[in-house]
Amino acid sequence: QVTLVESGGGLVQAGGSLRLSCTASGGILSNNAMGWFRQGPGKERQFVSAISWSGGGTYYLDSVKGRFAISRENAKNMVYLQMNSLKPEDTAVYYCALDPIFRGPARKFESSYNAWGQGTQVTVSS
Image 1 (cartoon, rainbow, N blue to C red):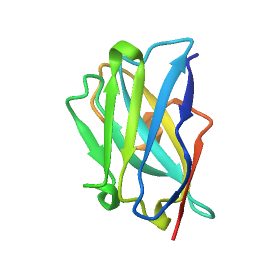
Image 2 (spheres, helix red, strand yellow):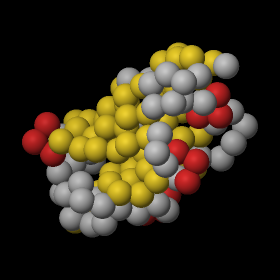
Image 3 (spheres, rainbow, N blue to C red):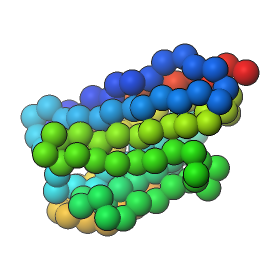
Image 4 (tube, helix red, strand yellow):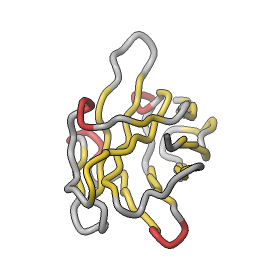
Protein backbone atom coordinates (compact mmCIF):
# COMPACT_ATOMS: atom_id res chain seq x y z
CA GLN A 1 0.00 0.00 0.00
CA VAL A 2 1.42 3.34 -1.03
CA THR A 3 1.83 6.02 1.63
CA LEU A 4 1.33 9.62 0.58
CA VAL A 5 3.14 12.46 2.32
CA GLU A 6 2.22 16.12 1.95
CA SER A 7 4.42 19.08 2.77
CA GLY A 8 4.56 22.82 2.26
CA GLY A 9 1.73 24.03 4.43
CA GLY A 10 2.07 26.92 6.82
CA LEU A 11 0.82 30.30 7.93
CA VAL A 12 0.55 33.03 5.31
CA GLN A 13 -1.13 36.39 5.04
CA ALA A 14 -4.04 36.93 2.69
CA GLY A 15 -2.76 37.49 -0.81
CA GLY A 16 0.28 35.32 -0.23
CA SER A 17 1.34 32.07 -1.82
CA LEU A 18 2.21 28.55 -0.81
CA ARG A 19 3.28 25.50 -2.74
CA LEU A 20 2.15 22.13 -1.48
CA SER A 21 3.98 18.97 -2.44
CA CYS A 22 2.94 15.35 -2.34
CA THR A 23 5.10 12.30 -2.74
CA ALA A 24 4.70 8.60 -2.16
CA SER A 25 6.69 6.10 -0.21
CA GLY A 26 6.37 2.45 -1.04
CA GLY A 27 5.06 3.15 -4.51
CA ILE A 28 5.02 5.41 -7.51
CA LEU A 29 2.54 8.03 -8.63
CA SER A 30 3.40 8.27 -12.28
CA ASN A 31 0.64 5.94 -13.53
CA ASN A 32 -2.17 7.41 -11.46
CA ALA A 33 -4.35 10.47 -11.44
CA MET A 34 -3.92 12.49 -8.27
CA GLY A 35 -6.15 14.84 -6.37
CA TRP A 36 -5.98 17.52 -3.72
CA PHE A 37 -8.77 17.92 -1.17
CA ARG A 38 -9.18 20.15 1.86
CA GLN A 39 -11.11 20.21 5.08
CA GLY A 40 -11.70 23.53 6.79
CA PRO A 41 -12.69 24.00 10.43
CA GLY A 42 -16.15 22.57 11.01
CA LYS A 43 -16.53 21.65 7.35
CA GLU A 44 -16.65 18.50 5.33
CA ARG A 45 -13.71 17.56 3.13
CA GLN A 46 -14.03 19.04 -0.32
CA PHE A 47 -12.39 18.58 -3.69
CA VAL A 48 -9.86 21.22 -4.68
CA SER A 49 -8.05 19.99 -7.78
CA ALA A 50 -7.10 16.88 -9.72
CA ILE A 51 -4.63 15.97 -12.43
CA SER A 52 -4.58 13.06 -14.85
CA TRP A 53 -1.73 10.56 -14.81
CA SER A 54 0.00 12.33 -17.70
CA GLY A 55 -0.67 15.84 -16.47
CA GLY A 56 -2.65 16.60 -19.59
CA GLY A 57 -5.98 16.96 -17.84
CA THR A 58 -6.84 19.00 -14.77
CA TYR A 59 -9.91 19.86 -12.70
CA TYR A 60 -10.41 22.72 -10.24
CA LEU A 61 -12.93 23.79 -7.66
CA ASP A 62 -14.57 26.91 -9.06
CA SER A 63 -13.47 29.08 -6.16
CA VAL A 64 -9.77 28.31 -6.75
CA LYS A 65 -9.69 28.61 -10.54
CA GLY A 66 -7.15 31.17 -11.62
CA ARG A 67 -5.47 31.12 -8.20
CA PHE A 68 -4.35 27.50 -7.78
CA ALA A 69 -2.40 25.35 -10.20
CA ILE A 70 -1.86 21.61 -9.96
CA SER A 71 1.13 20.01 -11.61
CA ARG A 72 3.25 16.89 -11.44
CA GLU A 73 6.74 15.64 -12.09
CA ASN A 74 6.43 11.93 -12.67
CA ALA A 75 10.17 11.45 -12.90
CA LYS A 76 10.44 12.76 -9.35
CA ASN A 77 7.30 11.03 -8.10
CA MET A 78 5.88 14.39 -7.07
CA VAL A 79 2.59 16.25 -7.34
CA TYR A 80 2.26 19.94 -6.50
CA LEU A 81 -0.42 22.47 -5.72
CA GLN A 82 0.69 26.06 -6.25
CA MET A 83 -1.64 28.35 -4.34
CA ASN A 84 -1.59 32.06 -5.07
CA SER A 85 -3.73 34.97 -3.91
CA LEU A 86 -4.68 33.01 -0.84
CA LYS A 87 -7.79 33.99 1.08
CA PRO A 88 -8.79 33.31 4.69
CA GLU A 89 -11.45 30.94 3.40
CA ASP A 90 -8.69 28.75 1.96
CA THR A 91 -7.68 27.89 5.52
CA ALA A 92 -7.88 24.11 5.85
CA VAL A 93 -5.97 20.89 6.13
CA TYR A 94 -4.98 19.92 2.61
CA TYR A 95 -4.76 16.27 1.59
CA CYS A 96 -3.37 14.63 -1.50
CA ALA A 97 -5.01 11.48 -2.75
CA LEU A 98 -4.26 8.75 -5.27
CA ASP A 99 -6.74 7.37 -7.79
CA PRO A 100 -6.15 3.63 -8.18
CA ILE A 101 -7.21 3.50 -11.83
CA PHE A 102 -4.20 2.81 -14.07
CA ARG A 103 -3.47 5.88 -16.22
CA GLY A 104 -6.86 7.37 -15.55
CA PRO A 105 -8.28 10.85 -16.07
CA ALA A 106 -8.53 13.57 -13.45
CA ARG A 107 -11.60 13.00 -11.29
CA LYS A 108 -13.25 15.21 -8.69
CA PHE A 109 -15.18 12.68 -6.61
CA GLU A 110 -13.70 11.73 -3.25
CA SER A 111 -14.89 8.15 -3.71
CA SER A 112 -12.55 7.82 -6.71
CA TYR A 113 -9.50 7.88 -4.45
CA ASN A 114 -8.27 5.08 -2.23
CA ALA A 115 -5.04 6.38 -0.70
CA TRP A 116 -4.68 9.56 1.33
CA GLY A 117 -1.93 11.48 3.01
CA GLN A 118 -2.05 12.73 6.58
CA GLY A 119 -2.61 16.29 5.46
CA THR A 120 -0.79 19.58 5.79
CA GLN A 121 -2.25 22.63 7.51
CA VAL A 122 -2.69 25.83 5.55
CA THR A 123 -3.69 28.89 7.54
CA VAL A 124 -4.39 32.21 5.83
CA SER A 125 -4.62 35.24 8.08
CA SER A 126 -6.60 38.32 7.14
